[in-house]
Amino acid sequence: MTNIKFMKNNAQLISALLVLGTFLIQGCSSTGTLHTEDRNCPDPSQDQLNENGYLMLQNGVTLKCQVKNYTSKLSCTGITDGKEDGWVCKSGTKNAVFVFDENGILKNAKTY
Image 1 (tube, rainbow, N blue to C red):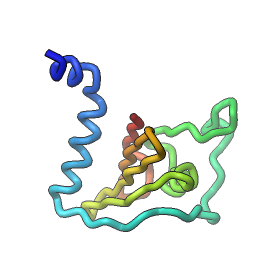
Image 2 (image 1 turned 120 degrees about the vertical axis):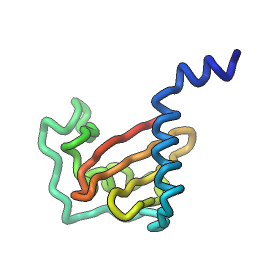
Image 3 (image 1 turned 180 degrees about the horizontal axis):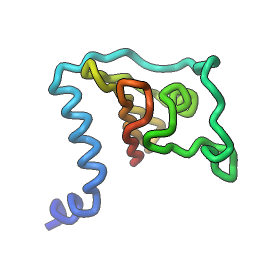
Image 4 (image 1 turned 30 degrees about the vertical axis):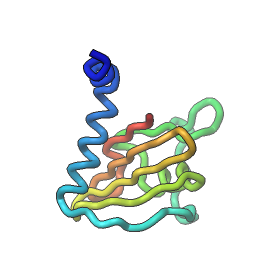
C-alpha cells in the first residue's frame, strides 16, 4: 500500500526519472561535472526573475547558459543523447533534472 501511495504522490518525479533513464538507455555520454559560470551568457530579463532576484525557470524561455549560472554552486553532471541534452544536479538533500532542446533552451525541469 505504501508503494502505491508513494507512486501516486510522486508521479512527476517518476516521470523525470524516466526521462533521465531514457537518456541513459539511448547511449548518452557524460559531459562531466559542470562547475564554471558562463560569463558570456545574457542576463535574464526582469520578468525572468522572482521578487528576490533569483532566476525563475521557464520552459521554452530560459537559456541553457542561464541555468548553468543558476546551478554553478551545485554538483551537476551533463548527459546527452545527441539531439537533446540535460543535467542532473545535487545539493545536499535537493536534486534537479534539466532537459534542453537542440537550441539550448530549457525544455523541462524538475526539482525534488
